[in-house]
Image (cartoon, rainbow over the protein chains, first blue to last red):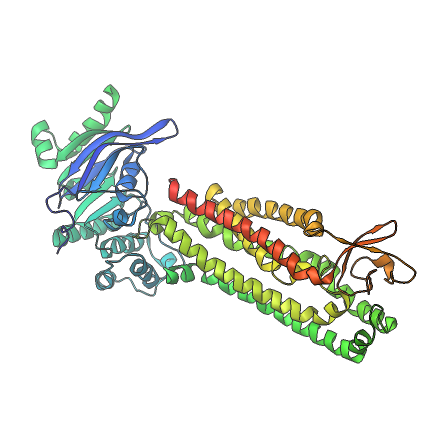
Length: 249
Length: 296
């Protein structure tokens, strides 16, 4: 699919001593990570752990206070076109313009992204039964999430970042959304980073795990290795790092 | 990007169009009857026939009594704030709405850097506001044309609706509101925060600075050259103390009057519009710079 052309053998994501300070408090500090190309990485942590801060620095929406981020081997500089174009992003609560129709949203995507894939966008909403002419404000929460995901996919960026994509959805929409992400990742070899505090949701989805608490990385690596090494179940493993390590720090 | 800006501001454009149509209907109705009366009273002849003094004072008085009340006072005094209202209504939500609804995460995570996104939005909307301002000015100027032949257009409440300044007032309020929207992050408080300084600056410039944009001329009154009515001041003085329609008489001195000659109208318009456009540019430049620099 040509998704990895921009990076060769470089990891999809590498951060080095990445940190972001808000006034005196650090939202995230000393974050060194690597996520290989093609992985579906789960980013887990309680609210306020620094998940959104990390994701926004990866996307290029937020400038790091220290350290640096590279996506497919190329340093991401905040607010720069090249950094923005490398990442598809579904923000928390799936923001879309309420008085736009779905077609208008796609028009916006086409106008603002050089690699926009209109065919992919239309096929996806057709398959989901979402009419192009319907206004965003008339869509259900699940449909809105799907339109957001569609826009991120149609951007044709090699890295897809999803920030708490299912936390506002009902169980049915959750399952549908998760299935769509897995299908897209499997079909295109896309690298996905998905943040959540809904741990069971991630178990089915992720082959890579990052646990974040109190602005620091507590645990990171391939899910299977981590489970084998700790001899615990996925959920148990995550919970143990969220509570115990966070307290001892 | 141009399409995106148009789609986002379509409803505001339609709102401005509705205001313009309303204004045009009002202006055509009142302006037509004013033109008819102007012709019936033979005022054009009165004005052409005499230099310094007006030929037929009774006809002039009849005409100004008929249209003076509508042309001036209440309506136009309220209308003075309209450019400010248009500017803040369009400007405040431009960034604040994105921050309020969280759509900034969508808008600024596409492949267009946020500073460029803002620059395009501002260019488009500023262009639209210039068109709106110019159209409003044209309608009002056409409507007032017969009245302007009697009073000139240098006086307060007339000057402010003609020439370049109405458009510059709109742009300035818009610039303030865009910046306030970025700093305050909420549309309605940003409208208020932008409108109040706009009004203050607007009034300070009108009453403290405008009379002195260029040094006023002084007129010494001799035997019969201070021929004006009503002491020579204001709209109702036809002609003003200088005897020349369109002169703006500022104040009385022991031996005569200080005034700005009618020929300076466009120089004054250019100076004042220049001040407001400079304020606009400063506010919009600051907004682009801040958005480029800081995390939203």
